[in-house]
Image 1: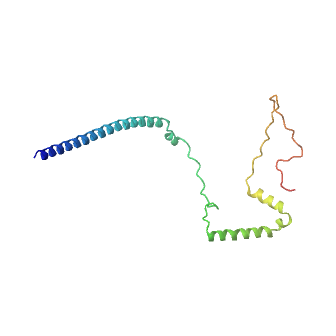
Image 2: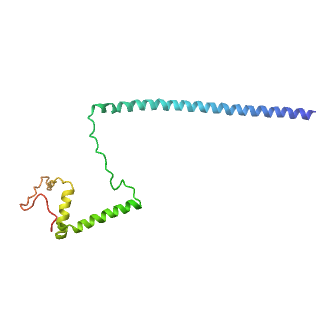
Length: 160
């Protein structure tokens, strides 16, 4: 009977050891959680300070005093907005073939193709502002004046 009693005591000692280990693990976990909680509190204080600083630089409240931006014109769907599939490719191809044949049958284009293209570009493209040539600087720092040609005109034609 002595052996059974020893087994019972050792079994109870093992159970006690397991409980002690479990409680020590719980204690460690609680300690680490409280440490993490204090760290997050510090971060939240820092975050609150940063938010206050950002509010000081927030100029959105001034937007009501600014004039309204110009309303944008509604955008017309362009070639980049069109989904390209078989039907749309066919339509585009037919339209381009018709336009190309109209250009080839144009009497102005038949007589002088370059001048016809030049006129078309002048009428369709926006007028570019005339740029002034930059003055060149000498070695001593004074500016050179460019000699103007009497025969040059503002716009140069593309005719050759």
